Length: 553
Image 1 (spheres, rainbow, N blue to C red):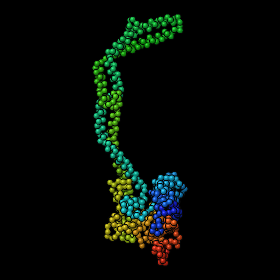
Image 2: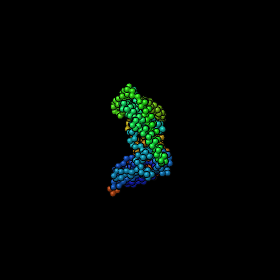
Image 3: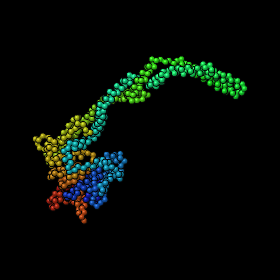
Image 4: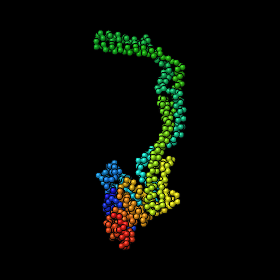
């Protein structure tokens, strides 16, 4: 509940420090005294917008702070814990606005973004303004009122989550569909290119092998001649074959070894050299014997190499890169094929998401229909009490799965008939201003009983109501105050008299400056204030007697 509100240099308020109690608090005052200023100031602590005009003239800044007890507000306590802002069982919201229009927000002394203050504020206080019944004419607000009464947050969250999943998959499908034409054209080109390269069937190392063998066969005659000449030098040259010369050198080395053992290594090295020459000769001879200069095979290699070069130019790659290019095209084609499969898969996934959303939306719609019937009876009873004895109120809930939104598939229409024999019609078409005000007030009070917000403020919601109807409104708000902290700004004595406590707003002008104050009234002062509301500035014995009758407790 709201325990204390402090206001400094806000509008025409220089300083106010107000302590509040449980139950219903009536707030009255003369016209123009600033009855709603405290509520406007409190709104700043709830994250409402502010500008430099809210700062009292001559002051450097305005400051408003509100202290709440959180004993019976588990949602607010959990939010503070989740955001590391908890402070025992209390919460202090503070807002400052400089004369330059800059504002700062604090929760339990910690600076916070305004949206955090706004989020927390919604868990602490609900404000019903004097024009709230006009918003009731809008279908989306009617839906909000019904959902608030039904309090089926888990169903709403489930529908919202399934709707978001549906939209994400829908977007993914749209992106794939938008690029489908490009993929089809690319796929046709790739299929032609891959089929051509598949038919050629180039091996991974084939180009290097062909290039090497082609070079060997192209130089076959020179290769044979070079081999033969090398063998001649190693073995067959009568004037000085390498092998013969090495044998002679070994003989001389052995002779030298007899003279000096230190030269033994010379003979060993020459022997090694002879072995190497002999092995080289044998290897070269084997190569020459196995060398085949097949002109048909050479022609095949020539044709194969020419085709490789042609395909490489066609695909704008180096001949050595043609095989890898082929594999890349095959992979891309495979990916495009999988995209087509993915398109079908996502289309099916989208349908599954839609079915899941519709199933959740149906559960939500069933809950809405159930609570709508319950609310129908209560609002109908309420408007009977509010001087519309023949009135009937019905909430028409229509499910249409083609209407998909985060709030489900329902369209909501508040319908009413105010006179016997008249059919139910949309509330905007039937209800007069006064009737709309009474219906709206009845709905606000009834739904407020079901909402977890511990403090409710009704700012002149009784406009357009008078006489016996006003007395009923007062009793309704007092009854609500038995379970919820209620503040009611009113000009009606029948409503104000039902408050558990009463605060009076007064405006005074001194030394060219205007100040507003708000003070609690005792029983005697309350009777006098109710008498003033009844009879104006002239208070008589009769108005005092009537005021005593109006005062409840």
